[in-house]
Amino acid sequence: MFKLYSSLRKELLLLLNDKVGLTLMFLMPLLLVFIITIIQDSAYKMVNENQIPLLVVNQDEGKEGVKLVDLLKKSGLFKIDSQDGIPQESLKSELLARGKMIALYIPATFSAGLESNAEDVSSILMDDLGLEHDTTAREKVSMPRLAFYNDPVLQENYSYSVMSVIQSYMSVIENSLMIDRMYANMDIAERSAKLKDKMISNRVGIDQIVARNNNSTAIPNSTQHNVPAWTIFAMFFMVVSLGSNIVKERVNGSFLRLKTMPTTFMVVMFSKMAVYVVVAALQVALTFSMGIWILPKLGLPKLSVPDNVVATIAVIFISSMAAVSYALMIGAFAKTEQQANGFGAISIIIFGAIGGILVPTFVMPGFMQFFSNFSPLHWCLEGFYVLFLKGGSWQDLRAVFAFLGIFIVFCQLGTYFKLRLERII
Image (cartoon, rainbow, N blue to C red; front, side, top):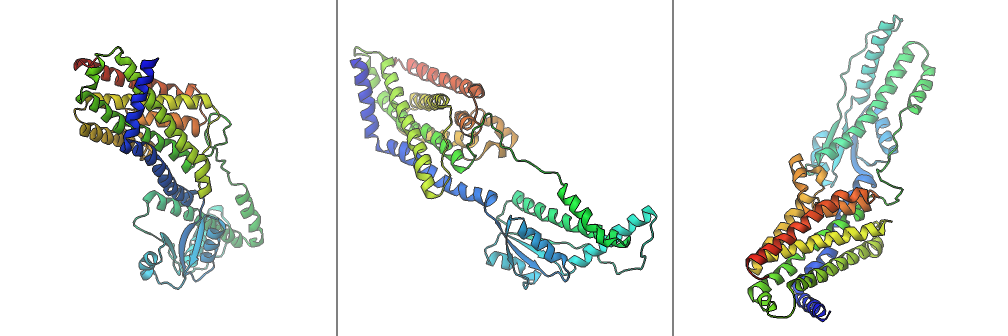
């Protein structure tokens, strides 16, 4: 027991003397969680909660342009800034000067074009049904085209989404005009309102359901995504501290001197793993506490901890062991501290990039999604997501434990055989 105590004390003193390593392991995750959560929460609210700022220039000479603007306002999706006096040729510069992201231009012939098209459709239908109607030739006006302007920095899929919403309200206006025109041609214009109300009230509804495996009330948000993700990233960055310590002890002969003492190498390695697993647990406690108590005071969503506490602890432990095992292997194979720090840090960034920490895996190309399966950070993150976002069970964590278990065994065996090859053990 004294040998184990002495070994643990030695590792703890080495850790406390590593100021850079401590900073990376404790200060970095707090900054990352704080900054990234704030940034992503703003973007999340822009898409999901806040109204979309929309500059509207309505130069329509009829009443349908006003109807379209009213429908956009009533939708609650847009914050309309009406500037009808802006000429179309100046709209590009006005959009950028006003700091807007999107603008909609309604041309002067908007109503006339829609009414002309409704008249044509109505005439075709009346002819097909063999019904008499007014055949007096009217002036034809081509179908109008709205102009949608967007800032070049705006994502293309976001622009398409906004245009789709506008198009859906355009369809409402077009259908209403066609019904009015057909009923007017049949001299029963006063009865068109009943059909229009029926069509609107009988539209198919869509219920949004968040897919979870139980009755968890946790709502996916920026905090639920970022706190676990960047905690894992910071856990693996212990390679800078633990890896460099391994290199130091190999280079200065500490491992060889241990062979002359009445202890075993396994006690030394167990002490290293035990200390850094505790460090990883402290990292998790620190960042999770920030998500529970500090972020809500800043107006950010609160972190909801999973109900399955035992499974959460198990995922934290196996993630910690994966991070410690990888750091040990880097320390065993690196020849200098610079190699350990450089390769270790860069490899963690690469693992984080392909593993979904920096960019979600579902937006990656297919071949990158395949390679993400080889990132330990991906499986650690998947374990947290199963619990924090999906309300998963032990059965849902089988793949996570399987891959991380294989990864830990691989790293541990790599460390053992490398040190054995150097006759350190």
